[in-house]
Amino acid sequence: MSWDWFTDPDYWSSRLVFQRMLAAIYLLAFVAAANQFRALLGERGLLPISRFVRRVPFRESPSLFHWHYSDRFFAAVAWTGAATSAALLLGAADPLPVWANLLVWAVPWVLYLSIVNVGQLWYSFGWESLLLETGFLAIFLGPASVAPPVPVLLLLLWLLFRVEFGAGLIKMRGDPCWRDLTCLRYHHETQPMPGPLSWYFHHLPGPLHKVEVLANHAAQLVVPFALFAPQPVATVAAGIVVVTQGWLVLSGNFAWLNVITITLAVAAVDGSLLPVPHPEPAPAPAWYVGLVLAMAAAMVVLSYWPVRNLLGRSQLMNYSFNRLHLANTYGAFGSVTRERHEVILEGTADEEITPDTEWREYELKGKPGDPYRRPPQIAPYHLRLDWQLWFAALSSRYAAGWLPALVGKLLAGDRAVRTLFRHDPFPDSPPAFVRARLFHYRYTTPRERGETGAWWVREPVGTVVRTCRLAPDGSPEPLGVD
Image 1 (cartoon, rainbow, N blue to C red):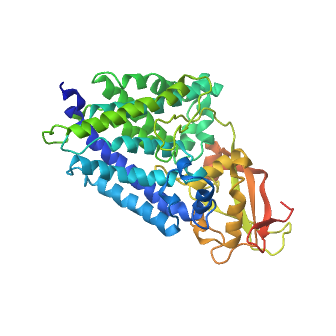
Image 2 (image 1 turned 30 degrees about the vertical axis):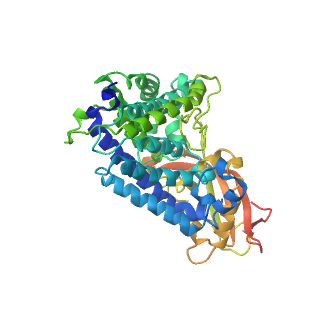
């Protein structure tokens, strides 16, 4: 029996570009983890890993941290992952034997899986599972000495299909504004983390918003089927995915979701279009063929659950059916909020609360706060606290397990928590009181923007956490006043 079909040298260059892009995303993810974990998950964090692993067994969240946890060990894991990813980005694994290449690519996957599985709500985003599933498949792509294995390329396309088609279906089944083409009248203003151009996107003429929605439906519900077509159709389909994802990169901040989707699209591109010289590939070792085929068979079996989800009436969005985050279901914005609210944290150094109390605002790095501050470009970096505060503004129940603890950390002047903020209004000593208020935000009109220079108009609408001071036990103590 001939095994010539097993590899396809026409995708040698595509594999190289895919691997470099994936390594860059891994690097970014590990650096973000190293920068933010102490405040969010550390021994004195808002949701400590040490507490989580005591109540959740290994079989439910496979992770190295079940064997040992300390902040120093987490930092070692994160920076080891970053160093390995940087080496992969520079092509250090390309000349290795097949077995060594597979082992090196397995390192960031194992390390990041260990982080995600204990990351709790801070790592509950769809792009975490997407990175893990993509990273798992990348383990089996092989080094430069062999041509890319066709089963792995097909599985990458199947993953991209689920990302795009799942997102398209959840929209058509969800909010009616996707069907009447009006969702983008609201989305650019109410999305979790607007970017520098989001204000301009919001003020596009109404007909162009309808064109945006129609283009989205075509890209997510029609184009994914063409990814499996012969060349050059598959390359054209991949190009459409790249363009539409690039549009999303310009219009908002969605961590590395769009960038990794673009990376997956590279797997469908005809490698002859990428002028990268490469050696004549050697035959794939028999053990490697068997390993890839066994992995592919396992992935086909695991795909039963996301397929059933896609075909079912109650489609889940961004859900993992197993603890290894393989063969997941994806999708985003099945519903679109019509109005924007923000949780604003404020503190005061005054020893007594009076009508004249001066409240100073904590400014986060990415989410809207100061109306005169232009929304920054954050993606593909991921600011986890900023994102979770967007959910907290939708409903306080999303933050019930950690927002009071955050207030307590601010009252105590916790150094790690303070690094999550762009501006700490109390750099020398912690505040006497802290509160969290809910504000309604809307974009300024072009006229208002010209007259005031502001990007947002806001007004207070309620209280999320009542005015608190630090209790003797270190917890926030509400005063019973707002």
